Length: 88
Image (cartoon, rainbow, N blue to C red; front, side):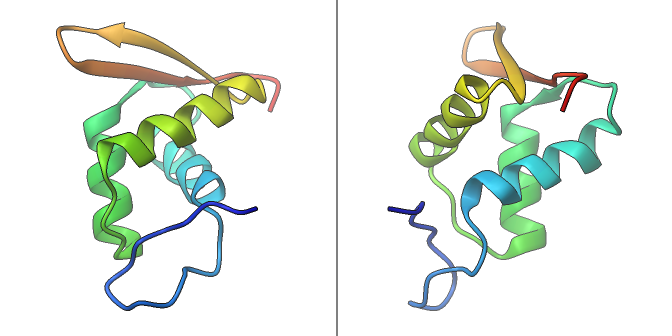
């Protein structure tokens, strides 16, 4: 079963959220810089016109981390620091 993505219209988005998050991370990090979860959420909402809850974002980040695509660590009180792994 694929990821459910909320968009401005009631139709599901064509691409799974994990793919969109990965592409957004590649663009934001330029392959090197870590990205803060709030920046990723804002980027997805603006560029893909998807309303995304923090819960959906964290669930997607966990999937990417389990797959070995990213590493996530805590950055401050509530922020997550996301790094793309080099061997992707």
